[in-house]
Image 1 (tube, one colour):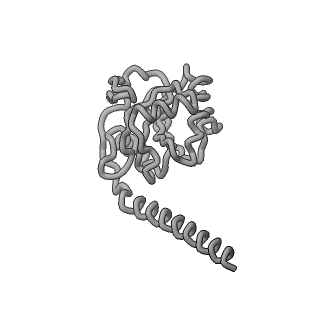
Image 2 (tube, rainbow, N blue to C red):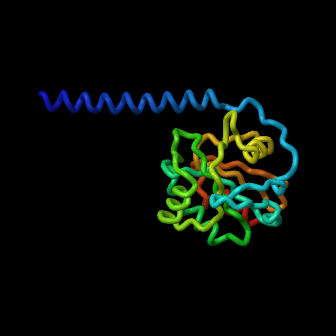
Image 3 (cartoon, rainbow, N blue to C red):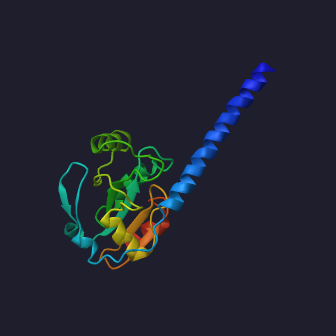
Length: 193
């Protein structure tokens, strides 16, 4: 009887914690939901951003390649997609540049420093594609790159590992939610066009 009561209390606490996390996620989504895409001029090739090691990367260098821009996190249920991102980079690197942007926007699932993130990616997934400094991908402090992507697609990341595919001439931007994996035929077929 005591054991059953203790187990019941433990389960009750677990469900309360899950409900609280769900409520926090819902409120965060409602409170940080973008109102309307800001008009952001220019092209994807006008951006110059710092990589995860602090070097400036000129996006002009990516002309002629598709760009797969992904908001990443180390403590997410989708974190294993790093392996597919790396495979996409290794297999189709001559046609697509995979660009990772760590973000702590969703339930604080990327709390680490740039050094910790780089170490985690290399140690666990052998990441060799470009990773950039941590940025905000939504909300009031949304980075200018993600403002541009929002303006082009009307979409903002709803969770970690959302993907934006900028076609090789920079004219079209496609959005794929987290559940669409990097090696999904939708993405690969678009890259191979």
